[in-house]
Length: 172
Image (cartoon, rainbow, N blue to C red; front, side, top):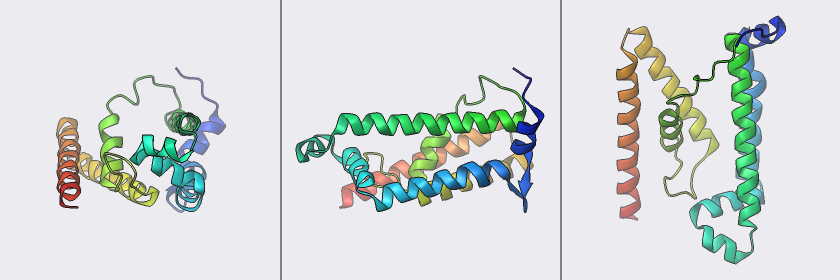
């Protein structure tokens, strides 16, 4: 679907000091807000507690259902922001643009330190892991590797991280 206003594509494709404008105006503020909320507020501790043991969190008196609804709403807001950024960058709406990105997002989260069973993780680690994955995929693209191999490398990273987490959990 085309017909995106020129001003929007100028913003989506623009850069300041070689850093894309959407990254400066959307990603960095969202990262900073998420970091503040999750690491510095009681609500962030509730989110970690709910991820680690929902039943215990409920017994302590934390409104788990309301908390889960708010976290899903924030997730939807960030997904909408990502859709807006892709619309402004590409200049058209493409319904298949997010296909097969589940593997990459899961790998970035786990590689960034988020525990598969919940309760642990950091926004800084996930951002660093996501940037690392983008760098690896860009390097493989520049080397001319097929996208199947890129997907295989991401899957291999996911398997390695899951094995490392499993070993770490059982050693504690």
